[in-house]
Length: 447
Picture 1: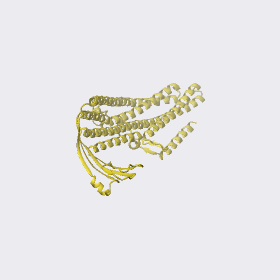
Picture 2: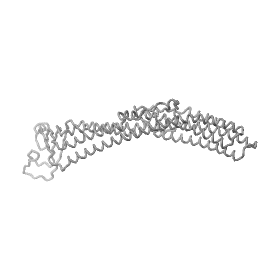
Picture 3: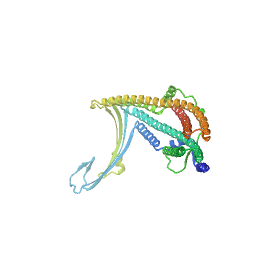
Picture 4: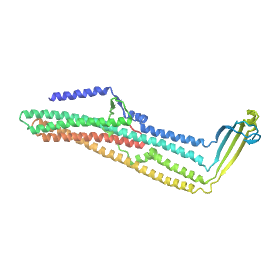
């Protein structure tokens, strides 16, 4: 029975290895690059950036004069004209009794706002700031995506390592159960003690299945972030993780925070919000200032009531003109004052947003920093605990095989070893993750 169980586990392992050999292997960098190129939420933020740039182009074009051409062609039908009389229509004396006649007009108009208190120039500035904020929104979403991918990636790697620990524990439980069966057959163990060993073996089998299920769930979440919808086998490249990586010096909290303030997009976005509010105040104040504009036009017309040729009519009726307009606001029902006050209120809101994001950033970095320090200390303690538990369990196993201790003592020693191994593995991966997240916040690099 013992040999058959071990053989079955070996066959399953070989089958999984052969299946995974043909699967695409994803590194962390590949996962991040693929998500940045294909994630739908990120693509939507990039569309918002493009839309904001269109507003910039439109406001820049508004600085230039506008030019339009117009033409109208009108046909009139008068079924019962009065004869013997003359009438004037559009500058022509109508003496005929034609029931149907037409008139055509052609014109070109140009307008240019010379000065409106700086509203046109400040509108360009405001739209540029909005476009920069949209780009920073996209960068913020990208950073959040990178963090989520890194956390899931490490969680998958840790859980896959936990499977190996659980499988090793299962193999040990199978050996202990088989030994217990031999003792029971030789009247050296009670049926109750054997039942405990069998229950432990069943629990270890469940632990393996649960860990494998957790890996599948984490991979499903990672595939969702990567927007993968195919049924291709999804496997991660297992990087080399050494104890030295988990024992690296944890950077100073204030150093990480000070560096993050210089490049984190959410902070830069809030600062741009303050700049945009200053421009909005200028725009609101410009409503109290005069507006100066110039215009020019050219116009001509034709009519069937004229005996002249069409070309001569265009020449004879050609008119041009130009003008200057001045608009001075006197009483605007408090619109300008309201706009100014609301712009100032918005600036105060942006100041609070900046402060809130700075506090939130510090809190996030502090959490990662504390986790890095605590997990690193746990890892150091867990390594010593694992070494002690391994030696202790080795001695307990030998005594159990000699019949010197009961199953309770054996299971206690085994549980201590499994707990120490899991603690060491978890603290190691979490320390590496938190150190890399601190590095990501400090200089924007995720390794």
